[in-house]
Length: 264
Image 1 (cartoon, helix red, strand yellow):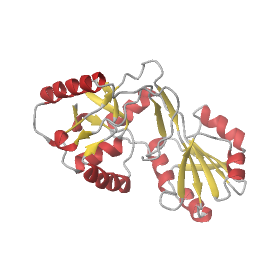
Image 2 (spheres, rainbow, N blue to C red):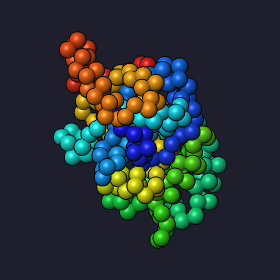
Image 3 (cartoon, rainbow, N blue to C red):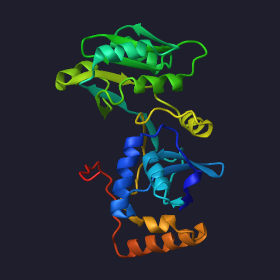
């Protein structure tokens, strides 16, 4: 158990997702899956679960049950989601991109755009289904995080968005008839994630992906316990006893293989 106020997000919050999750949490009365954090100087950097923490705050919770991991623990990895966009009005999207101050769209090939992004010479890459490719370049003195937020804002709400790991644009367009564009983002480092959380320069939502071995799910902690004013020491003592009881009752199971969940 940690104070909600001590959990710092590194990415933007999608207000519509917070509203939907708040209603679901209110109906369930429990927090099923704890957010995942890494400790940093008496605070915690949220690696996964920013929407949950904001929804809990909206519901009046003071504390949250969090899974605490170390960034340098074996198996913990930081990856990046790509955004595959379907049914995007590309003309309006292109016009919006060209209006972003400090951003240059450099026409290139997909291979060159990916290579520049891997070297961090650009802040992103975009492939359109019509064959156009842009390397996204930041002008000197421009804030790359601000620019990326504006890029995402140019298509957010205008297209159906899928988070994908694949970066083969040609194959994705062949296999998805409605796909209009593929957007690639930089591969960030843990120190950059910490800095975003600490200085408030939030990355766009849905681009960082943390791989956490042994991710805790279906904990089902009552929201009333997260709202309660009981001191954290007592709450953590209760949590420790409860976890021991669950293990003694053989209710804890580890699935080391990848799984699909159909109730998220």
